[in-house]
Image (cartoon, rainbow, N blue to C red; front, side, top):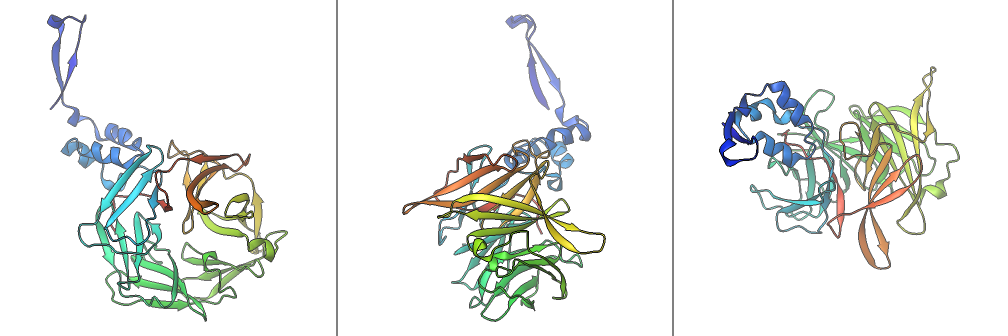
Length: 368
């Protein structure tokens, strides 16, 4: 039973204690409250008030969250992971009690999980730091260069699968591991681009590969390894220019976007271009330049590229790019978190607590 004081006239004699059973609020009212809790720590506290509030707001109903920033602290031997919340300016620290993590790289995030690689142990860990649920994947051949984890919660059959894009000196491949199995399955696919593995993207069970030499984007079926279709280069494509650019292909609420960030004389981004994949009535595909993505925002870092709706999260500004990248001033690196207005090009630096920022992370309370 929760109590509140009701005061009439302001005198001590007129004070009375009124009682109200807040736990009896209708579930639909509790859900309205919970949907406005866009910081996961507030959502957890809300559910902890009483059994009725907890049962009315299951973890599957977690409101859309503003992404956190993962700290990069090199070889991590402490088992600690730190995250920065931009809206609150707050740092969260988590430790996995089940194992002592020693990792050298964070390979990306998906569905509330982070993939951590450990060359020392020859393994990948997939960890949800909030639920403390982790999955130790089978030993991996680290003589192959592993670029990033593109883990999807389910494959085309609805099964939970971990995906890693890797390549050696012959052919890039998509390495997959079903949860609970003790080995990786390798699916090789054709590519003329060997040295820029960051141009590979996994969207809707398809592999998108931007070819540096030609500007062509090859799209391969991740289930079969067969080439599905080829997208011509954007207008005015120049191979020399792309040597100083970074490309991302993103699923934006059903639209496929190509985002090209162009570097100046340093790591600093001096301009950007955004294209939408257009399919004509004849079935041919091409990139069409756009200058507006509506009520959406792009989140980009070295490994991740995803879109969130500004209408779902009050702290997100619409039609913007949230870019996490290191900027070097002489020999001293410092983290750069920028918000770029797509329509006007206006840029704003956002404060981060870390000397080295790794990637974006969307927190979740669910377990795979």
